[in-house]
Image 1: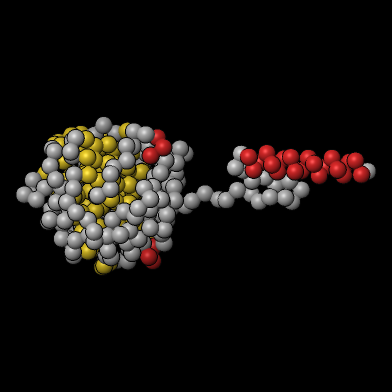
Image 2: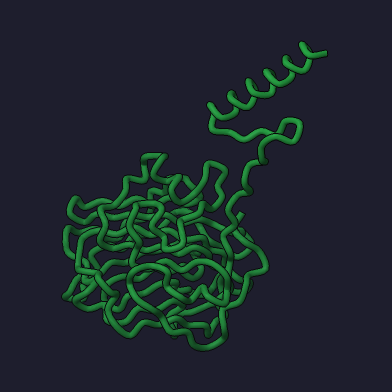
Length: 269
């Protein structure tokens, strides 16, 4: 009996050590804990008249030639003929889902008011197609851009790409979501925008995994959005509907108006 007990104890220790060496957690005879559950990104709904506005520059942001952007988007019913301006920094950047074609477009603007990047996805973000992840980076000093939709490279329709400086601070003295006049109902989650950090190369799979999992699901970007790069981005909108309008990033607060942001009927997968 003593030999059997000694054998069972040794076996339990051996299995526990093996689990530890693989960074795992095992439950054996009540020993150990199950692995933690995955991250859930809270989807929120913008009504047609929901608006978030910051009538000033983003704190700490300078004009530059670079940028990174990540968010989850789901079109609402009846908006396939509506251009939805998701994010706008007046005179600097426009991010919008276009009417009819349903593609995503990013426009970048210099201090003279000239478009220096105007590139659209080939992929569509139409009503009924569910949640999509949009990931982008640009470096106009090259100049170059990368778009990824649901973790797949999107070559994009290029209507202009110029080596010039984006007027993030010179002219962008008003920032808004769901801009009045170019607005539509949509669902969104985990919007992350950074204009000044050195852009990650999203052709490197490990860099995309900082924003989207191999299973095409959201990943936890941290309470202030600093997890992907180690530094908080200028804008990070995330979390529960009641506090989604609070910028968790470093660029300063936004004021909400119109219909309140509410929890979406679904979350990103």
